[in-house]
Image (cartoon, rainbow, N blue to C red; front, side, top):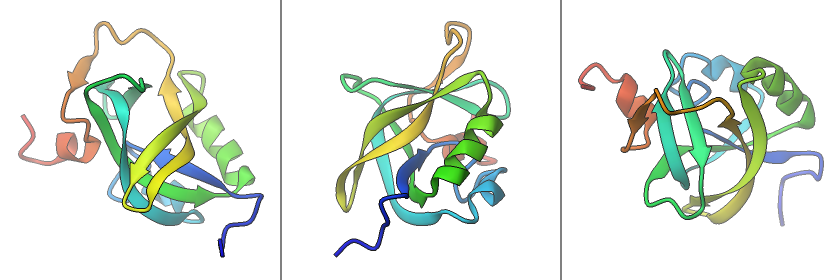
Length: 129
């Protein structure tokens, strides 16, 4: 039996909203479900990343899956701003594949540094190149 109500949604976060990220506090009312990954490419914008999701990509974006309320999603839409669009993706987790919302970067990524390892926390570690 699922403990999630129909008014809650899966949410995949890959950058500063992750549990070790600088904006993790924004997720305090969400419930962590699992670590996961999804096909796509992660880019470094500045102090935050950009994701482009692509089901046919050979690279993966690493992140965390949460259960979030519609109210939290609305607040995070505002936080993410006009550079991002909330989209639905499939996240692979130890619990199996899960459909989830995530924010996809809208501007051009042509001049951005691609992060082929797909893990923003790895990029932010002191030993990152």
